[in-house]
Image (cartoon, rainbow, N blue to C red; front, side, top):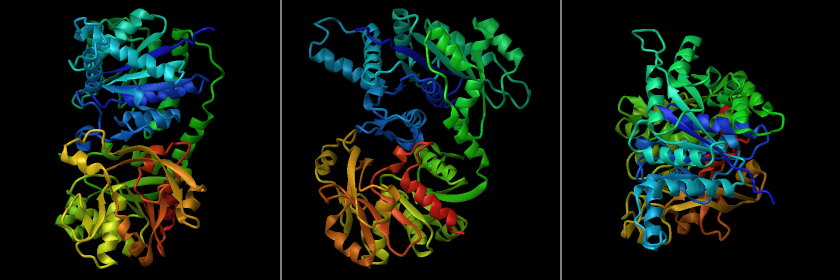
Length: 545
């Protein structure tokens, strides 16, 4: 039996971080999938953390959770949304995870008593993981995004892994560079020199880019392409423009227009079926034709970084809202609301929330901004504004209801107030030991779990199913001792774990839309398959006026 051919495309970054490597990786994967190929994607992060779970979202952005319960970088979410595939933990690695595996193997004599060296053993472990992920997903093409920027010390070992794999399989490996071409305001001219230097830095690692995706506010003109081609030993056809666009879901179409897919297929000598980009074209039409706005207020605390607004901490939430809005032919507009500011100025909260059509409280941890979130929940409940709570947003809704409707003024979560006499939110069974022993990384309730939906509930109506699977990331839960009191007062548990111990969804009676989930539905939303809870929320918000 002939062994399946595996091919690999590495995506690296030049000049600055945040240039769009993740979107480029996902877009190329989507284009190859549209040609009938099996595609998977891997993210390599250069930090020492074993996973992304313990990092502050303001510093690193959203933590995306895979179905098998691994806490990863937000780019894994982009891969899932573009490829419409579940990405598993095998597709994610960091310096810390790789070193951990090498050290554990050495401790168990996996290297047969040899001296273990940074090179070649660390790059070889990277290559082993890449090949294993390709086999697991039976991929014709495996996309590998290397985090960071070419020229940094941190990602040298991953670039060495790319060099070694390309040396082993020269016909099966391509190197792509996503680089930034600035247009300084004082000059008014696009400058290619930073990208030329990035390519030179890539040369220093033994790699030559097979194609370049040039990011800028404008398209790359011919003189710039000619200069890059001449000084960097590239064909002009392999230099593509990726100017700023209104929606990241436009990127696959713009790359396809420039012939990138055909160039990749030719270089890898892959035979494919006729392309089918109709779903992407239909999505783009919906995006551009959706002009009637729906305004969603997002009440969080991972919003500001210095003088700038940070959206990366809630990127899956934003994308899920967009998917739902576009499916309903609405134009999503977001109002960023800092819950800590609400605590300092409650009157400002009423002003800020007055113009929104829906209020969403996303996930989070810790004590900061809790009271501000509770105030926002109360406003949504009393003013009959559609409300969607996610994870911590469910817990805040339970606390608010307990305080204001049930009259338990000190009701709280034991995460915030361990001494509350009404712990409506308490720590999950078995988590006390983890906290006591300071075992925080990878110990939350993580990954995919089943949920049963109550007959006659709004949740079951929205899903159209009785049993669903959703992804979790939490350490605290609704206290089952208080469930009857909540139900009697009108806040119902419409989704439960199969053993009926854990509350997964709550909904409020006599309200246009007041739903919250302990899980994170945003992780399952796709541009072609909006999540039912987000669809219901945005539809209710759109009908508010």
